[in-house]
Length: 436
Image 1 (cartoon, rainbow, N blue to C red):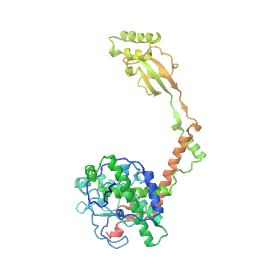
Image 2: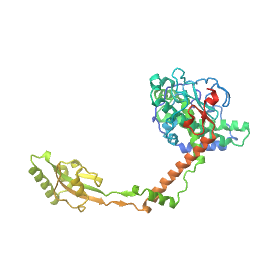
Image 3: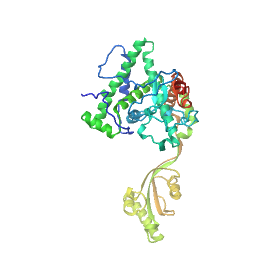
Image 4: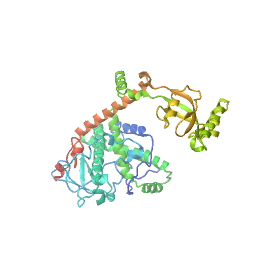
């Protein structure tokens, strides 16, 4: 199988969302775990290069000043590109709802000095430039002056910071306690392994789904879809390491005790109340379809007589009725109490004996005859019947809370400098680093 080169230099524009969906994420996570456990005993072919962030000019965090970062062309895949393409859950749901809305002490972005290479955050040792979040070609003066521009940029930045912090934590945990040299080798090996998975599994799967038999056809697909292979690889690696970090530190299925289930049932009892519902058939003689009210009554009476005489209800409905469901044999599927437009019909459906024909009834549209096929009275589903459903909900709630708690811990222990520290608890102003 031909491997796509890692540094192919092929540039495209901007990735569209939802173009691809692939499976096997769990399997890939397992491969990462295997890679970590063997990080000091295996070596990879040099054809796989480390998935390191692009090198930018500047001094490390803590210095009294930072050189103007050098923009590395075409980081044009938008945030969350891999998670969007693969159907993976992104991290936006874990962000505070106030992100981008809290008034900031940072000076507003100045169009005259706006540049893709402007540094807006540092996570650990990794810088984040405006060009990492927004394609510079898409930023116009008109767009920057819209009320939502800064808010959207701040939300995008907060999510990328969280993702980078998690990815860094995962790598650091794997090499913790090692010598400096071993740490460096271990970090390189982990990133190489993720890169290997991307090019051995993800790219071939993408080519197969898009029916691309050659690299040239695949590059053409990427250009048409406005994707960049290198940035998609970077996003994939970061997303995968971040998710693996969560998976290794948060239990997949937290314990859900019986008392938890019972408390949820009592507190959400309305969720388990089911209204009365019925399935029924109806014959209709609409006033608008007959020359007079008397003629409409004669028509509905004849329909009723034919059903009583033994002709199938469905046949009579299709051949003689002119109501809404006549072509379906007058059949209405499960309908809840008070859901029908006609109160007269609704009252009859939920009062007459099932399998019996009603009397001729009249509403504003015409005359009707109803037969209830099946009806279920309103009820509250017993606790024992919904225990599995409640347990699943409790597990999901607990897992979500544990994930949020863990992310809070990561936020508090990861050194972060950002233009908008109010959006990321524990972060410090970027001005502390660049001296502005």
